Length: 193
Image 1 (tube, rainbow, N blue to C red):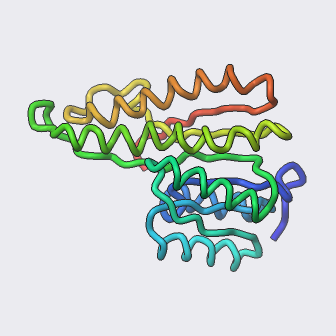
Image 2: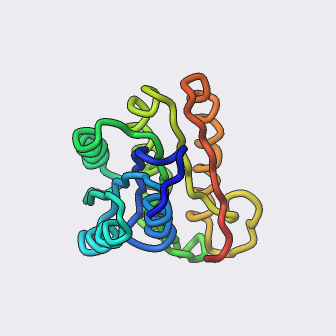
């Protein structure tokens, strides 16, 4: 495993790291020498991601948590800090498509669940990481979507698009707030994956 000199020894927290973009990012960063806190809801997926990181010569710990639960997120960040003593990179990646349905058919609980995971989960992830990022500076990456910035033609995606637009707005606000502390904030907006 070769390590990038700017990344080697850094510590990252990645939500939704049991599969998809989160898992791929965890493996990529681990190959660059970053120690990875692998956070998600499915323990088997977390164990598989950590095993893949270790097989590549990296270090990872599984953090089983629900991003919508403030106490889960606080405890997960605390556990990561106890394990490695620092936090440099946060990738708020956990998210769901939720239910795509015409507005009159979308149940309030379905709307709330999508907003809770995609938007509140991003807030809680960053909130509990910020005190540690401020210590030495760092980076926050939020995984939003083109559905929150420019594609508003997917009928039935009102909860999803609203949550993703909210993530973009949140990222812009915290970028200003955290810049004086040398914490860079970026939002990525993928299309179809």
